[in-house]
Each structure stands twice: as structure tokens, then as C-alpha cells.
Image (cartoon, rainbow, N blue to C red):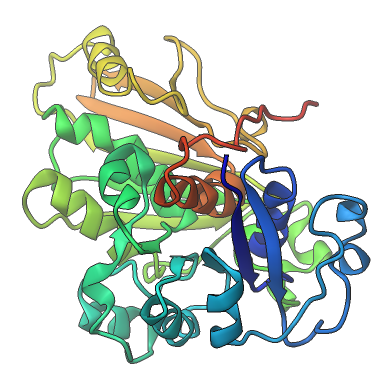
Length: 351
């Protein structure tokens, strides 16, 4: 079996750290390039001792050079801030190298919406149409033919997967959706900031980014495509005093208030029957972040309230694996002609 050479730009962030963890044990990909301007010159195993003696631990961290990356790599992961990835992706694509972008630079199809929400002009509108939104359960066929993947955000992954079956099967109204989402502190990134210091997060619970969280247009874009018309929803985010995990509680209004929980579960089970990473939980069970930690699973819990005519959908994922690096690797697998789950067969470590 062919071994694909992978490059990783942005090795020092949480997404880069998680992707390095996954790549060193991947049976068909070899981490051959790791980039960070601040840590250039260090061996990867020196910078991340948990990787020592693993394949790729002797790679020397370097400053990103597009020409060199194109020569050395079959696929390059860009785990860099929004506004940075687009300039890195352009020369790689021109050289024929596959790119998986973990930033938001190619997620939004309309560059004007990108500028509005990210306060940054999109400098490569010419390659924007080439980007495929990398949610494997929805777009696997398109991903397998693509050279540029816009890896979804962590919150949008949980919300879109949570809503998909309900909208696809016409179970809920699309003009009355409220999302109450909560994330572990790693979702804010690894850069030191007052709001994510231990003493600020521990023994605390707070909302943030209301009502202008940058993932809002990404969720609305994909849900609108699914619904076949423009959807506006209320998206509200909170930070939890834990390292990793997302729990999104999605409040919807049933089109038919007489719809039962059994009918909803039947529709969800049928929709996700061939998607092993989507677990529709039994009646009476609700998802918990600990059961998806470090894995690709998305656990869905369903609650029907006959009194209010509402369907509440609870969606739990790991924000770093399913919501970022693991999903990026799944997309790279498809791009390289490998089974989507290669190197991603993981259960949550408990307790």
C-alpha cells in the first residue's frame, strides 16, 4: 500500500498537536514536514515529548516554505489562524499538492460574508470555488475528488450533524431554531489569553461571543443548503471548565406536534444507518462529552416534548478530534483514496 507524505503547518496549536498525535500512528501516512516559525529548529519529539520514538518524531520543525512543501508532501494540513491559510494554500494548489485547511478561510462560499464576520479581505477568491466543505457524512464523494478541503468548524460539526436528519426528513420548522452550545477551553486555542487561564475557567461557567460568534454564518450556510432556502438561527456559545468536548443543545419546533419520539428516532436511525461515527442513542439516554473524548463519534440524543411541540436534539463531539484534526485526517484519507476511517478507529479513554 502506498504511503502518503503529509505536511503539517501550525504544529504548536491544539489542532496541530492533535493532528500530530493521529498522524504518527497512521498506517498509510507519514508526517514528513512540521512547521512553526517560533519553534523552528527543534525536533518534533523534543517539542512534544509524548511523540518521542514514534514515526515522525525526528522531523525537524521548520519555517513554512510553499515550494519545499510541494516537493516533499502529497497533502498539507494548514492548522493556522483565519486569514493566514489562504496565502499558503494558493501556491500549494498551483503545484498540485492537496490541501486540508483547518482555518475558516475556505468554509464560507461568499467572500463578502467572510469579510463581514472575520474582518479580513479574502485575497484568493479565484480558488474559493474549488473548496469542498469537508463533512464526510454529507460530502464524501465530493471530498474524494477535491484538491482543497475546507475543514468544518467544531461547533458547526456538532450542530449540522445534529440538525441534518430532522431537516432532511421534514420533521421541524426551520424558522425557529435555537442552539445552546458549550465547549471545552481548548476550543479557544492554545495562545495565552486572560479568558482561558486556569483560574478564569476552573470552577466557572460563562457565555461568550453573543450574538456574533464567527461560526454562525457557517452553520446557516450549510443548514440553508440542506433546507433549500435561507435559514436564520440563534447560535449561543459557552465555555465549560474542561479541556475538550462540545455539547450542543438544539431546540426546534416540530412541524406536526403529534409526532412521537419513536417516529423521530426511526427517521434519525434510517438517515444515519450507514454512518458508523453517528450514534443515535436509545430512548431515555442523553449524550455526554466523556463518551466521545478523543474520538470521531458524534452522539445524538433526542427529546420530544408533546406539551410544547418541540424536538430537542443534543449533539456531543470532541472538539479537537471530530471537530478539527480527526475530521481533517478523515478528509485527507478520502482525498488520497483511502477508507475514510483509516487511522481513526478510536474509543474514548475512560474514566
